[in-house]
Picture 1 (cartoon, helix red, strand yellow):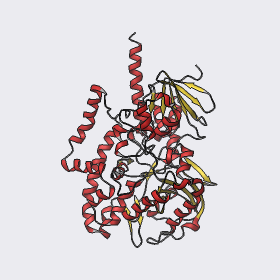
Picture 2: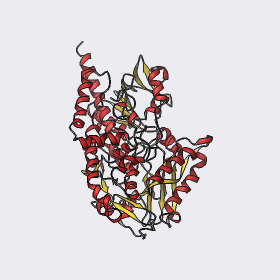
Picture 3: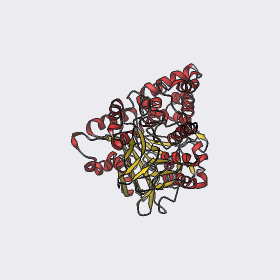
Picture 4: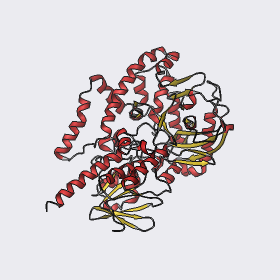
Length: 535
């Protein structure tokens, strides 16, 4: 019947595509509704200046689940990831670090021999903790009041934690409760070494390295893998859009209908059950299953009638924490940056790295303090990637593109100011921050694409510019993501599911929420089918 489907997916980001694929593969008639003119959500590649293309928002890959890659046969659809020649490059005032590829300990030994001795133990400890997260990523968190099944799930998911040795259990407790500064102080001495790790604690996290709980985000960024190598980060040839293009191809092959420029205005609910959606055009589409790849804040504050939610859930969604403090830029470059501490414009291995400008824990805390009082950091934290050093399809010969992922920018500016009035000023500040380390940088910028927190919200539906669809803090993780009692991907409205990063295991291009939500939808569908056919 026209307008009737087995499942509707709100949002064509990577998790929505993953969810749609698994449902269609199980025989369901599925339609994805994407409000933009391109599928992929925040994982897209776009031309931002003639001849220059780049990953527009999400910009690097590691966390994508191997099972999702295999099940969707993404490599058959063009998915290819290459590793950086160096993991991270950190320029300081008069020194630098080049980390990864088996050289990290030797680099630490150059500047801090005691930290070189500590590093293998630290790396092993984080590796053990990351293994726990990998095991939990594709599991549905247990919920309170779920009866015997929930108790069994809690026991099964808790058993690997109980089997950890005492030292690892202590590390786990510390990383979930302590600040990144406290955690790293327990391992290292030199501030430059601590900075090399602390950066991961503030990526997409509007917090300082001294903020309690910030250590967890440090761990969240190391449980991925590239080409079978744990903890490695890489570049998708063609940019992040190549990943979602491959996913869309897999979806269409499975029979999924993908509709672009089809923004959803409202989830239709009848007698406590989702029955479909109304598009902004006024068209209504019907299905017994609606899976939302948008964040919980956007879904429950704007797309669901408040009368369809109980008072406690409304209150908790009203206070659901969003805003990752991120300012995102892409720049077209006429030449590679020439760093003062490692001179040269010719392509070198450090140009392929994640170039992190965050020279010390105090610098990072000041950046956060600035953002809270002033609206943005006057000395921001910047990670620059130059993907054209690994992928020459992104820029004209001799030129390059760079991604600038910048941290500590308030989602909402104080004193009623708008990001629309400040975005150019802040973009200049960011360019100056990089130029302080690479004096040729400003003059090499041909063009730039700016995404303030407000731009990220308007363009990608990321409330508060939150790249994770909600803060990755202990009160919004695992069985409490997005709130306790609804971490099993089921909303408090029957037939409505969460399949995006606002559900477990959280943000990043993982595919895990989409995979897990599809499993729960199919489980519910199977139970319903059995009930109907018993009558």
